[in-house]
Amino acid sequence: MSSNHINAQKKDISDKIIIAGDPVRVKNIAYNYLQDVIKINTIRYMLGYTGYYKNVRISILSHGMGIPSVSIYLTELIEFYNVKKIIRIGTCGSVLHNIQLNDIIIAIGACTDSNINRIRFNNYDFSAVANFKLVLDAYKISKKLNIPVHIGNVFTTDLFYQKDKKIINIIKEHRILGIEMETAGIYFLSSLYNIDSLSVCTVSDHIESGEKLSYKERESILNKSIQIVLETICK
Ligand code: HPA
Image (cartoon, rainbow, N blue to C red; front, side, top):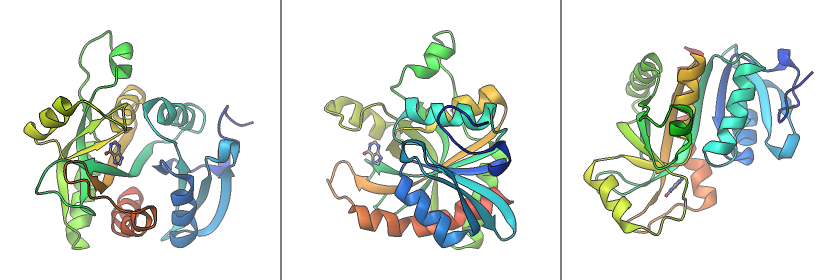
């Protein structure tokens, strides 16, 4: 038996899972950092793997782009596969001058222009926050590894190609650290299902200056954040 979009057996997915948008990133992380890797998903090429990091069994699965896509995978992971701890490793854009390409952001909370959380929360404002222990663990681990991180709010958008400069200025005025496309949805579902989640993003583009990392550079800079994420999920 498997779920609608994941063709793994129940026993083949750990209750600790790392998720990432890009299937190629997932495959690279699995084969570069885990031992005894098995493939757990092939549907839609949203690749997933289970293996061991320092003798702890963890899974890693791709989730595509945006809240609708990540919500499908998260719901199936939680409802069908009983996943309890989820960390997203992703990329984001930034508009702040003190945040550079390659910087790492730990998302304590997520604002959003998406209506999805409101649809599920009787049209009220839901405060989308990370699990506190995961934030604390990730922070302590980053200190120990001597990897600097920024900790604060991100903005989860439905629009990668945002034409409205007003919203970019508002994001800047409110000192939002990064713009990405999934975290507010992940934190909502984690709250609904009482599981622990965290989102860790590396800055891949600076929206004001137009600087951006190439696809190849993006994959190599994730090396620092993956260390934080692997140590945190195993703790
Ligand atoms: N916007 C939204 N999502 C992103 C961005 C961005 O600029 N960069 C990486 N993910």
